[in-house]
Length: 427
Image (tube, rainbow, N blue to C red; front, side, top):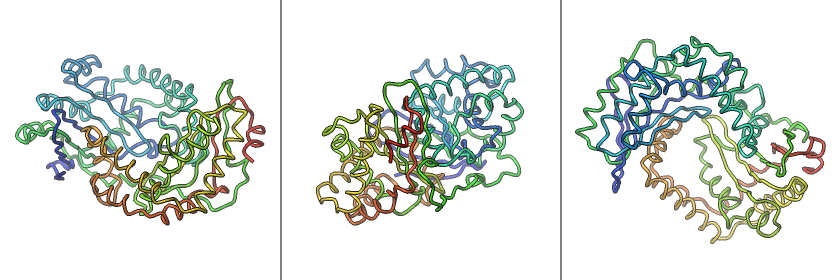
């Protein structure tokens, strides 16, 4: 069972014992990401993440930072999202103290050397280009743009643009870092094989001073509200015309925020439609008609808003046929009640996948980190499964009618076709 406490300097500590493993994951998460940025500094949260690996006073260079953990086979990395940034080390329990020392050092003592900042700009620009050159990844950014617009941070690329990355200064990055990276704005999760006596000693590495004037920052972002205004299809479609053999398409709908009580019903609904190789869309779009190689559903949620989506990779000339089949399946699940077996199978599929992931101490660490920052109250895997199991066939039908409003659907398409051609296929 997990246990929450607070360190003297304001850091929230969550201990999550995981039996049957020798591994230990230490994860530090801050509630800051790209949606907290101004347009001219787009990509700064991600840039700060990169700078954590470029040198501290104790470990002056990138090589000294990485070689230390590489020497004992640890897994370590960081990730930036729209609304959080995390850093973690996964290693054997025997290396707990070394891992704590390393993680605390990069978080609180990184130098942000001016030369390293300038050099890293090129690295990040190439990372942004790498994702943009991959249609499967690029269509996700395009989908966020068409869903949230170019004027809202949720519609911007997490990595920023080449112009914003090149334009940011060391002083701007340092100020942004200092605004958000302080003990009171951090949750530290220790998950796995926890030795409590070693942990007590290791926590001394996270004794950074609390600082002055710290404020509640996790909700200091620009809220997003869906417009009820009816938009023509042309305004709900965004395309990227490229010389490709395959089209990538995401059909997105306004979804649910992180704490919406209907989120469990939405999970079951999306699982029935596109949660695996026996799901309705996979069977109808791929197996019966051979219209796509990939077809799947997904959802994303924030404190204030969410998305439900359907993604497919297919022959550009068959885009229209695939969309028609998808629409038919959405209409079917809106009108007809799902069978008891299909409902039960979806629930057990979700529970089974969650159970397998929870065997991993890294997954446990991320689960509790995100729950702490975004959930109204922390729930264990077992508590979530109980709520999934309470979802009824009527709930699934109700959610289908709530979510799949075609007049609100947005389309992101990367293909060799121009917008006029894509629009003709989507009608």
